Amino acid sequence: MTNVFKPVSASHVTISELMLPSHTNFSGKIHGGYILSLLDQIAFASASKFSGNYCVTASVDTVNFLQPIEVGELVTMKASVNYVGRSSMIIGIRVEAENIQTGVVKHCNSSYFTMVAKDDQGKSVPVPGLQLKTINDVRRFSNCLKQIELKKVHEVHEVEFDYCSPENLAHLSQYNIQLELQMHKK
Image (cartoon, rainbow, N blue to C red; front, side):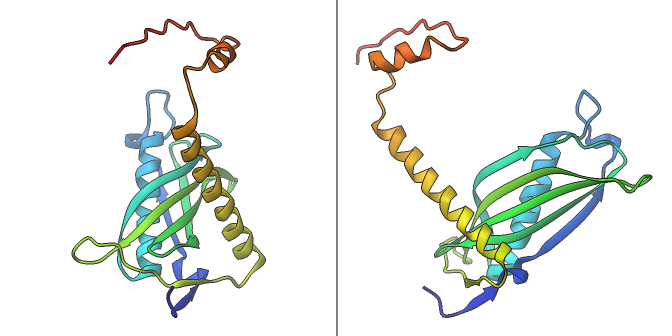
């Protein structure tokens, strides 16, 4: 553990960008892939600002697309470190789109990226500890702890669960699938 602690505010990054026709998908809305690219950039900026190191994306834990973003809207992304481990940080990002003619703002996306701090040789390095100064800081940190625990449970499930058990195969019959399983012998 580190003896250096920084407040969540040391990681705050905000970016805004006007959405252009070149950012659209085939339905005329802003392409989700373009938004993902911006999310990765702001996660990098927040993590690097907080840690003082180059950071890489370890995982994209959650991306919830809540509402479509339209051409001509001003998209604002706000990011901060919600959790720190030894060398990892979970960055929470809120995306809002503003209709610049009416001033109406809508919450379009919430995302969580796990970033890892690296040195010049690409080795993981410790990050500062996190000072929790507000109820929101504590809430966000606690929610990250729950998310980390759920990931661990999922990983154990992947290793231990028998997907081809008669019980599981029978359970799958209630879904909109056609099961044509061919068992290959090794």
